[in-house]
Image (cartoon, rainbow, N blue to C red):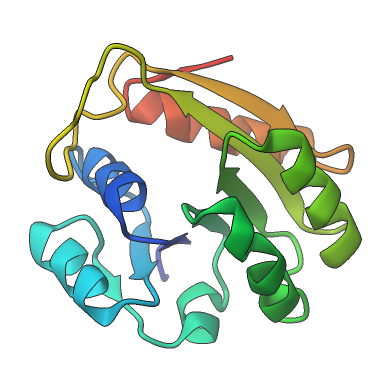
Length: 171
């Protein structure tokens, strides 16, 4: 039986660090990564942040049980529009953003209600200028979590379990 699939879209500092944090312990799921910059994706794969990368956005999240978006807010509308018809019907979509309410409003407008949309903002205080991608970037950080009105209890639990797994604290 295939492992559940988790996709990280956006493999810059936040996405790659999240992938590295997830890889600290043996995983019971496959982590697939995508970045519009192929060099960034290759670096994340080489660092071990993801099990594999997929250059095609649609293939990256096809059949994913959970998709994590670690991209700037300005890219979300286009991404939601591209993903809306091809997301796994009961997919949990975790958007890492500090623009939580605008992201939820945009998702409600552009995505099917069956998609479990949850936003989370990792509060990284006192970290200063953090060089490179790090598996411990989120340790002891507080993640403010805000689910959409249509998000299920299971979707919220999946996200809070993921946050706890990387040694952060969901709020």
